[in-house]
Amino acid sequence: MTELLTRRKILTLAAVSTAAIALAAGTEAWAQDATPVPNASDVKVPPAAGTVDEAKLLAPGTLKDIVMGKAEAPVTIVEYASMTCPHCAHFATTTLPTIKEKYIDTGKAKLILREFPFDPRAAAAFMLARCAPEERYYPLVEVLFKQQEQWAGAANAEEPLLQISKLAGFTQESFKACLTNQKLLDDVNAVRERGANEFGVNATPTFFINGTRYSGALSVDEMSAIIDGLLK
Image (cartoon, rainbow, N blue to C red):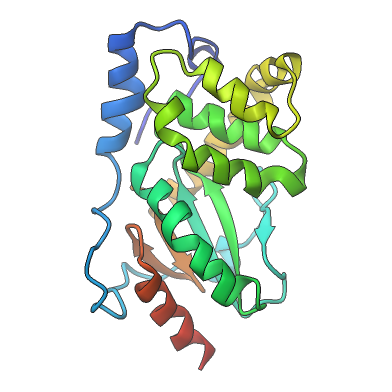
């Protein structure tokens, strides 16, 4: 299992060398992603990677689940993601908007995003999203994924992350206070460890749709087929 992210690693986000960044926040993190995004749309229902007890999956953890959609929606999508994962960014920017329009906005499904950071930069991004007001959580996550290349691979990630955070109302002081919040970092680590130890998550993105596990960045057609099957 990936070594626990520490406060020291978060605090040295902008201080490490360019070579170290390439190793810790670039190549290593991206190499641990799940399978490449599928190009073909003819595969309607992807193979499941097992099931988990949905009640246990949805039980409260160290961080509150922030739900996108109506709480009473019949289909629940739980996504474990890393903010530096390019396949997670692809899902967030390419697939999720259509799924949101078709199923989440219509009350058929809801989404819960959970933290599974593979590196200090991903942990920092998740911490910033958690420090934002709850109604700005998903909008900030969306911007972080859309602008992932600007901060995840930058020589100094602090400045682009600060500029993005200011869009959500952060000041320089609140930005630094968030990234030095040890309890929040511990809670983010705990969400990841729970996902790994209790639900077998070992790559991102990993989805649990009504308790059935799917690995990799699902396409619109694949996720639609899964959801449609559950709505019948």
